[in-house]
Image (cartoon, rainbow over all chains, first blue to last red; front, side, top):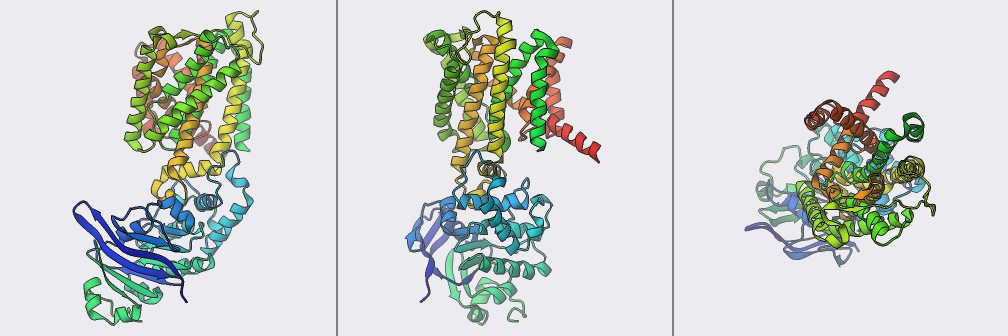
Length: 257
Length: 316
């Protein structure tokens, strides 16, 4: 028996006259790594924005842990266990790695509105930050300013900060964009291992890199012009030339390993 | 540790001032303390929160008028009671205005705060019975911890008991703010300044974090305003004019934006600078403007940034 974590139910999102998502439905169950693929403008980021509470769907519903979370908004949803990262790396330039990761730890502990106790004296949160940093191999970077990290490290800190919330599910919008192809695998390996260690039950990745999808995804969801056109295991996906052609164009010949 | 030492040095300098400078210059330091208190609050919103308010002179004026109305119209001379009323009044107004203004950020937030500041300015002119209209209200000498100090001359009161009272208030308000900016709340506020959307997805209710900063900054400005009113002996509608808000922003940038000691350094340097410029040239506003431009271009972290850089350089 697999447990359903997140359900998109006939989600429609319009920008004025343009329909970015039309009636998209799918479920995500515990233990899945779901890759969302599709050409530019297919609605992948809109989907992530709608599922994560940034946008309100015009029609349909988003159900997390069996309850509708439509209209709940990003911060409440993040605290409930549905986190996300952004396509462009988002670290606070003025923060150290430790401070960056601590924001979510304090939010999760309900201490965001503690005004008179310095952040440095919270022992439980400090341990939590260290544990998360260690899971990402960033333990030696805690006092480094985020601005002076490498691009790959920034990506990891960015995702680590979201995983401090200990979400059950995380939506990752192109986690390896802007990373050199030589480093992509290492970043993905680190990321998936850290997610597992920190108790994340399912991941949704928007991803363009077919090799990464072939290697790490347990399911592929294809979007085109705002509609769901594929939802299948990766081996079936890579064996279906018609689907590949619609969603990707060309597949590198070594994608199937 | 460094903060504690710097704080003690600042306190020692202020404590030595009356002995070193004599009564005339000491009376000039009280407004510095008043502005420092107000700007410590505004710096939370502007420096740490990234929200530029052009309306905070309103809260300065609320503090001044609270003290004046209590003392002159209601006969409540206790400065402690006046401060409490000033904080409550300003906190309430900030609490109401903040609900509207904080729906926006950037220039839209700035323009809304400016608009509310202008509304308040005209309110002070129109409601003559309460506010004394154009001429304002003169502020009778308050009692401090129940002592009226009636035997002292005006100057002796200001440079004596009131100076120490203002310095004590500054010390307490500074320490509270030092805790606030170092707290989880301070971290969340800075996070929201750097990236609002990301911060929301880290479980931080960005609106309410900013709201608390807005209300706190209003309360700090009111305390500064009450001290200012006593030191100049009047609550004047000009205190709430938008140029006053502009000055407050200028002083924060001059001192060093988003740094704990920025407002103090700014208030001291601004007063010294204005004094020196006004004594030497009738074009002092021109000179101040040029200095602001130079600071923004060459020293974006203000005078405090220059000082810390010089200290780091010497240590190397």
